[in-house]
Image (cartoon, rainbow, N blue to C red; front, top):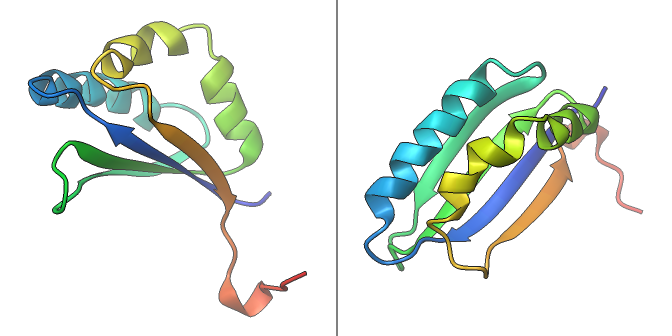
Length: 104
């Protein structure tokens, strides 16, 4: 299996920063126990404090897909997403070791 990293670039609504962080903590508690989840980081932009970067690492793409389709997922992430503007983006990347990297 190949590990993957999910990157979400987020734009938090003004005045909703505390709600965002609190709801993220709830999501993180569940994610940390979810099979295939390897870790997360939440970063806040120094240039634009309304911009945040959330990254998570997973054992496989299948693990991410199970997380996203888990019956409790939408209810869990709903309060966090309610703190965000709609201009967010999500990308999934395969993690490669430099020694194994082949550019096609």
